[in-house]
Image (cartoon, rainbow, N blue to C red; front, side):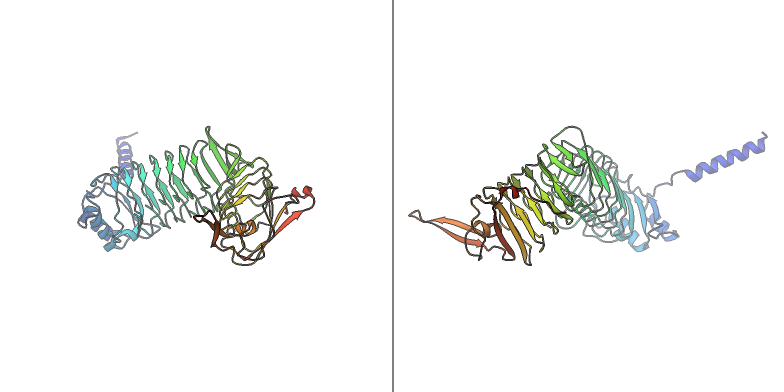
Length: 444
């Protein structure tokens, strides 16, 4: 190989290295302004990529580096990808300052400073308000994401928080475009954290210790979820997740799965969630139907729980196709158990002793709904089918009526109606002549 060839190869190597060298960060706001003015790109599909290393200062201050940067972006009117990882800021809490809208519309991708250890939360206005086109967020050192931080960032598609351990209430609520969530170290997920993330197909949270109420409600595209069997799950956090057909649990704990992984249970006897249930189902070993366990299962037509004693709050809410329910061992049916179930005729089979019933049993039913309660011939406590809305009877309690008890100085007890029964419920209490009829036929 001659010297000319060697020189040519060295030149190509140097040129290749130069082409692949990471671009230098912008350390001056004026240079950023000039760069954006000259940039030929700047569309949503081809945003201007910038690595920035400026002092962000107190981000709530109008003269801060952060707000001046946003104003430059606003004036340029070009979509940008911003890497702020090298930037310093006042404190360790990243606060994009929701009161300011300048420039945020044009931010497509954002890498937060490594100096940031948390993202501020806000009860009223989401922290990332006005970031209407924000598609991705990454934060290498953020461990805590505040309340409602990214609420209703509908363009947000992917988030990456490699060391995040806490996601507060409503943090990603309403992020309908969110598909990719990487939070491998997260331990706490707050109430409503991913509520209405309708594009989220699955999530793996292998270290989660708690999952809040409604954390994943209405994630209609979710097909699978993985978390520890030891996690604390108080109520069903998967309401309306009609596609969720796979709960995958790791480690040892009170939680378990049945029905080929489609249903989540506690201690093998309490049903927490069965979001994909449809048609007719029989669950022989469940003694407690948890709060909202079937909430939103519009395709569920029949259920049989031969040993269930407690039917939880709003357990069958919005099960609009439900026509048959068998609870022969029930001792308590909680508030709103059949709320918003529409006008579909419903037959409920109960046992020898009338269960206690909570209020607003059929709240939200606004049209005529025939309901038959079938009980054994020798059953007690049910009384007759209600013929009006004023009588204090089990049937009217079941229809959602309520009465307050008072006692005067002489010990005389009286009752005053505090809530009227839902007169749209045409209730018939049917005493069966043949106890064998207690084996309810589940209608397909």
